[in-house]
Amino acid sequence: MLNYIRSELYRITHTRAAYVTAAILSAGILVINLVLHFWGGGVNYYGHTSFSYALNISEPFLYVIMGAVVAFALYESRRKNGNLKNTVAFGLTRPQIFIGQCISALLAATAIMVVVLAVWLASAELLLSRTEIWTIGDFLSSTATSISWPSPGLFLQYFSSPSSNAR
Image (tube, rainbow, N blue to C red; front, side, top):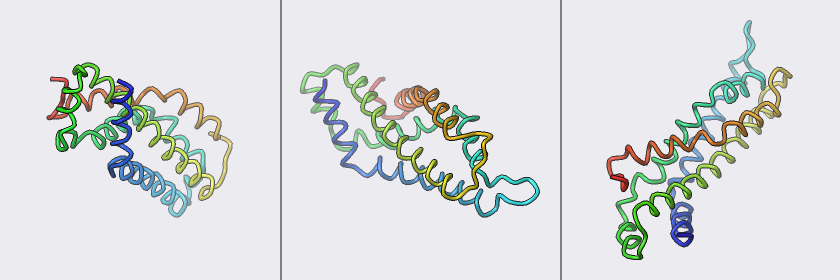
């Protein structure tokens, strides 16, 4: 089973899906912080770090949605290259395949999340004015609290995809 997880991680790191997903999510966060920087002024001033951090702190359910997005990006073409017949011929059962794909997707989603959160923190600190309503510590503790939330999104996307192995 460890060999299967290793082969899934190899497949994920040698295809564009994970990199494109991380780039799109990071670009989205960068655009949000750029919008707050350039158009966040005025009477109700939103161009500060606390407002940017509050997007993460107040909406932890977005982690579930992002888990589903990452699972879709990683496994939308899983039947295209014929890996399943080799895996089944090797002797892995379907529950073992499902667990291996879930573990590899969770590891990939965690790596993507680290990259996106690093872009979020860096762009917020460099572009926005600093306030002490919500701090980096609040941002990181909220992230640590919500770290397990992408799992349901990954599992739901896996079961709801048209070419699911679990059926």
